[in-house]
Image 1 (spheres, rainbow, N blue to C red):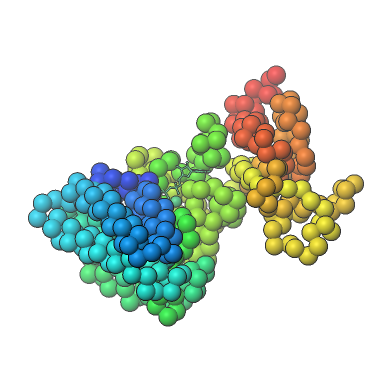
Image 2: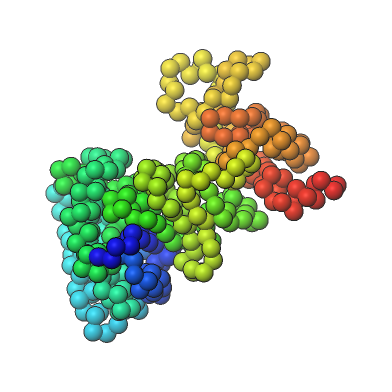
Length: 425
Ligand code: ADP
Ligand code: ASP
Ligand code: MG
């Protein structure tokens, strides 16, 4: 293995949505490996595949034997068509039969698992759920070989607690030493199925929905990587959800603290716990666009970015309730709103909650609070509460005005030209 620090590159489901996606991912990975660093690639299931697998796992769990067999056969056929088409597109002729054989053998196992229902339910669900990542890993490894970069699929290196909720760092390091390092030392790209973990007794677990981001940083920590690249379908971490705020802009830098807070508030581009292994090991994380690999992306490191607001997140399904009325049921409290004439109130997560909160990430000050309130007032949106909370600077509004409030606050607090325009007006 070269003495350079390894690099981990993670491709999300949006990056490997079809055969061309695998070919593109292979080109990016082979290009990085050609620069002399040992490279491990973490790959997600093709977009939509995990949803289909989880639906089939649930649908077959309680169905009669004939129905379960039918569902298993249908899913196998659909996944077979999609993955074999992707393999044919991304893997050249002489390398293709081996990849096809591996894909078919994974599909055989999946069909059997779906129909047989032999494992305990949680383990069965996890085995089925991670099948999408296993299929992707075989195709990416084939596409890498076709792109001139020798590659092999590594056995699951991420060690977790029994339910998958916790990554065990020492055990992960040991699994990486056993399953990933030897591949890197041979000069191979180690291809790791994301989302999958192993419990202490060796059972398959999952890291939770969107968990491949966490797989990448946990793997990075386990192999002593210097950098982790999260390749996705947008230019990096944007300062608000681009599906809700058309003017959202890419953030060039973020600290672990800011990125971790933003992810925990629901910024979908990063799994909520992605930053934990990265911050613990001081690994720089770059969030980059697979479809435009020359765009600079967002660099996340220990360096704090100074005062000011960085980004806005939106949380729905909240309700404002007096703390004493919660009567010890503090599990659902999202954050405390501090004391006012109503006493101490809390923002509580409720499926039926009719309030929403726009929350500022970074180090905002009183100016931002005042500017935000002015803007909401001008837009005719009455805040139910506004101020600093443990979650960040929060503007609580009626759920029916939530997206509008997010856009108004983004224009007022994050778009510099809007700020400049406001100063002139
Ligand atoms: P991947 O398949 O790469 O894991 P995800 O769908 O999980 O991709 O995450 C990327 C998506 O997250 C983007 O397409 C974007 O719509 C959404 N998203 C939500 N909030 C943000 C944000 N603040 N910055 C970037 N993307 C965001
Ligand atoms: N494929 C998994 C999911 O859809 C993990 C991931 O994409 O990160 O949740
Ligand atoms: Mg994701």
